[in-house]
Image (cartoon, rainbow, N blue to C red; front, side):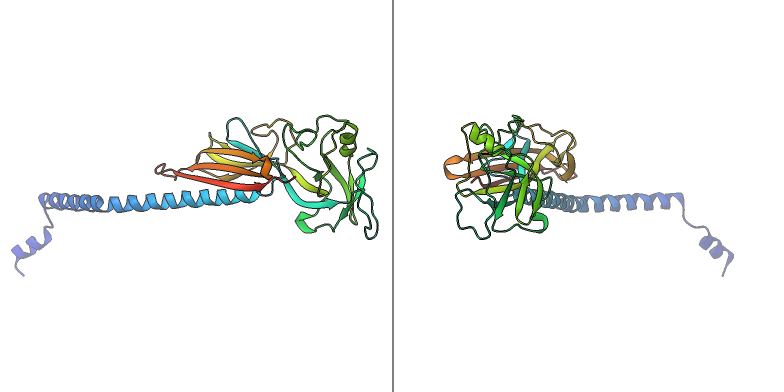
Length: 292
């Protein structure tokens, strides 16, 4: 190999050649970005919408399931429409009434005449598991809702007369339930007894609220707080759990159809994907049974 050829092979490339390569690479890269950015953005937008839709659908399913567990006529919405409250039931049972005759094994009827009578027999057996009445739960008889005292389970503010339809359970043994107080005798004494035509009572675990915190863009579930005659939104001192994130807005409504013993809940939830584009709005209606 000649010396001239050897020097030519060892010299590398010039600055002009390097600049040309850089320019050509930049042009090719720009073309690639232009051609693929639209498909990539479309994919990311579709994935975001799918995630937001799935989140909204799961939230709707949870709300529908919980609202169907509401004590009849206990659903209420605050003035902003962003908070909905209800009293959660664990089960519906039947009490032994004074006019029940020929009851196998006898029993103690729910006494509407004596405030000192704190026990009664549950007819038809007591459920087990998570539906079993336990100390700390309460019973409600013939709930009619707000403004229908003494048929308003939220309002027991007339203590010590307990002119309402709710009382706590202090013991449950062998089909006999013991109450903390007998508010039903006070109803009769006041001339407003609300005996259940079907001799039914509901076991309730307490009030629950769902609400939208617009500042944090979250749909939150609140529970483990006290009964309030007037709705407090959000409730004070409650345990909280986030049901959904990226919530832009929500609206709840409750329409009671008293003549049909049913209610209609309207829910509007608006979610946004994490990219902030293409908001998802879901509207849903839920029928609930308001037969007390």
